[in-house]
Length: 196
Image (tube, rainbow, N blue to C red; front, top):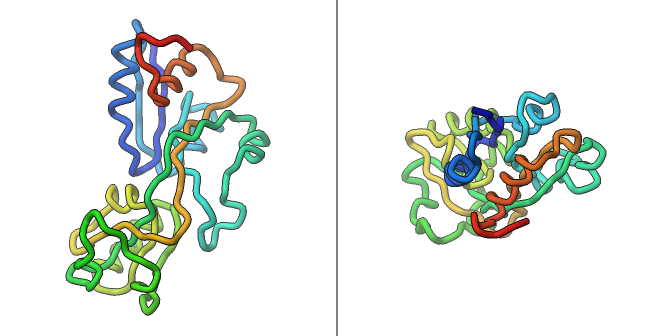
């Protein structure tokens, strides 16, 4: 048995892709692990491919928009899969709890709030959610990340009017091969019956 080593960002739920890969690729399985920093595993060669979060312009993170030029300088390929919804976390019983699960909070709703952290670093989100749970401030981060690291006593909602994040596949150019291309195709929705 051969293994494709896949590392994925905290908050990403890639199980369906792994299942399809395992079904379609005889003699291969996806060996996966979540990571707060999947790109580092791709760059140092401990993972064959990463499912990474590419931030937009987030506070305190200059040059954080990892675009095609940045990927080229790192000598990696990048394929964007989908956009994430921005989110906000607040203490339970906060006024934002009245916003429905399928509705969005707007900027005007949080003008008076203390924003403890705004960004995509899972460690800092976890740390600040502990403070939010103590009924102090709010945190702005991708909604899937907030969902994945949620704390008791914290609610989260979608947030409109801010730049979101993307989820992308990233792999080193010198590690590109047919197996990786098959996995990329599966993540992009290629069916078993279609050819590349």
